[in-house]
Image (tube, rainbow, N blue to C red; front, side, top):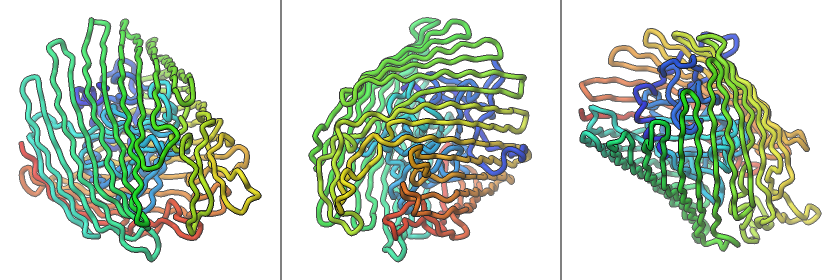
Length: 633
């Protein structure tokens, strides 16, 4: 709702440069921006930025009582990522799986949960496919984003279904004061090109901005000895914000990304779009209210074997939030109505469903200690009622050290594919049999407990989080006729999972050096078989190092991943890997900047998923891009 606007209001506090990891005994090798907790009553700082995703309303990262990573505009400009996968890869608790490079299918696993269990918000608007359940991460235009917040742990009490592993929110560009626009062009190997531009204007109470991007590449092979598979993407963001006389704000924000991506055996035309209309206003000195009306679309046309398959989904949401304050204490109450619709060449047994929810959050402060309660009830016409809640405690030992303890419940809703996919028979080289949805499925239910400790000092910070998550009614696809040589696959509630993990992060900034490190250890297990959950890596590490040298900046990122299994029986093992990315920037004239990014400098061959039992999806080798940008003042 007003989340994107609040970030804008507090943008002077939300720049969070990466900091060098001094506490090497505990925090070797991990990137991303873990945030140190604040001292109660302390003003926000670069080490402790405003975060709006973890709670209802703006909080500093420490006040959120959650494990939070913030990637701000400065980080994005330095790293110059080409995709959301580049931003998320190796961040604490995050595992990214791709079926090749350049716009190919991408899954994001947060704390060992599946990609359907991570919620993606765009300026407060939820974006996902209602048929598959996951977000189309590969189509999201990172060039038009000014910040990303990663909140780990269950948040169904605030966001409802699917916020099991965590919530990731992207904030699209909102030009700052003194900027009128920009234009940028770049080119690289694999015949890659991109061009982007933006413009903005403002009066005393109204501001308007528009930005656009076009990117295309011939791509590279996504399987060994395969043909190059290209990607084309055109995207735009429009924003209109009006400040109300009483201190409130009304806004309209639109994001759209469309294009085409090729894969082995066919290609896909895609379009994702979010539209949010929001009004937030104070009704009294103690009551602030906000309403958001939004629509999100995920549409694709799959062309394969001379036929076309269409899967278009639309989610419409109305959300009302009210915040009441009494001194340092706060109560938030809200309601949400959501409608999912499916339009497809596949005849689903049901093509729509509605969800109604009531939610609340109580925040109490007692000097150095904080207590937070959240409760939500969802009523879905497809699978009935679900109640979720959480409780979190935080305590400052002194000005530099803080501990947090939390417990939360969550649930993942069965998708339209899970529930309503019609019976279809397939005869492919890699699969022969049938598949159909199961209307009797129950939602997955999760319970999670977390203990975290953070240290926050003048130039550096460290953060340690330990957690355990238990998931019941895990939805798994099984052969209902194992004695039959053909496969008769159905989704069923049979599996239970236990996920344990530890996340370590540290950083330091001094003398123009910025270094952030993060390390994740995860043990995601099927409790019945004791096998590791499919495609989950058990460990990861990331290091981001950047140096400012006058008009020059240089930096690099190292990302390491442990091995994983591509099958539930843990027979198909994919090796771990380490990659190195390098970057440099040069402000060669006033308002002119040149940037060079080289990914996978060592040309490492690696895979995070398989196309079949004998064929791996392979990532691109060394990838370079040189771009030039001019900023209008």
